Length: 355
Image 1 (cartoon, helix red, strand yellow):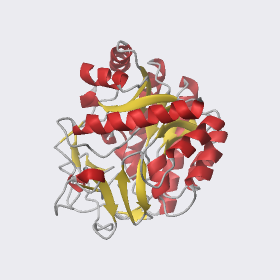
Image 2 (tube, helix red, strand yellow):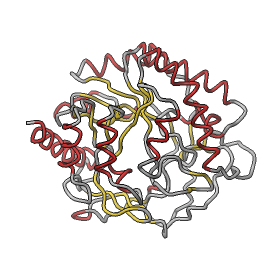
Image 3 (cartoon, helix red, strand yellow):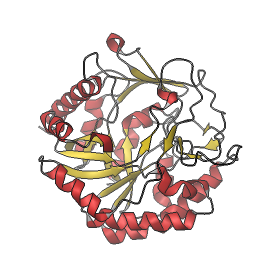
Image 4 (cartoon, helix red, strand yellow):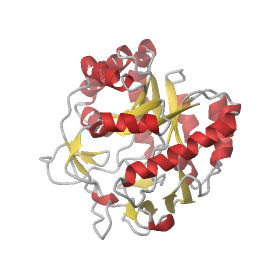
């Protein structure tokens, strides 16, 4: 198993590459999503729960030259680029919404998968969701009053409709007509996912790229009028069975699976790691489950991190593990301090587990 760090496009710089190495990382998972408009109000403190999200740039397709340039910069700091996490919503909103540009956007995704393969990046993580990540609030409720993410279904309106021009909690068209997206059933969402996989998996196989599906967070049954896809552990298996392929894999998130109302994290983790279906892992800790849970420091919470990593080691998982989230620490660099703590804990635990 290898220790990695997740970095956003705006964080791809010399200081953060050095930080990753100093914290013990050998690999990075990169978010290339372009967006602007400030912080998501659903993650802010206070009473603003509108959650209209982030206004999205109409991002161009990721070109081969750009990907190779980023990879070379990463490698110049002694790191390996393991995966890209999340398609840009502007690239596939009609794939999610079953809109008029779906086929054209699928062709764009195929082009990017080919570029990702040619650039030597082995994994493309994605989250097939219309509402995306929504409903959290950031509050000083962690250990020592650390700023931490909290989801409480009684504190947000889960039925708040999504306005036209929005997908994945981002506004891709601020000039969309007035009105809201129609409700989306579970059957419709699974049909859309199957169409996506039927189109993309053959290209991924040709290019040596693994698609890695992230589960829902929050893992509720419905959110903002739309069904959720993988909100129970067993639904990972349904996703894999749609298109059986080495390129149809999982982005396994400890926190998201633990938050689910049913199932057992350890047996589920054992099942899919034994089958070789996990592409990479998000390692964080939480207290509670739907309908209320809170993210906590990695050395506390409901997940026995040592037990989880021992399962992965026993089943010969050799992929990358990153701390996807962490409470922020009270200092001049709260994210870096929180990540350094999580990285140190993971590094020590990995060494203990692997001997």
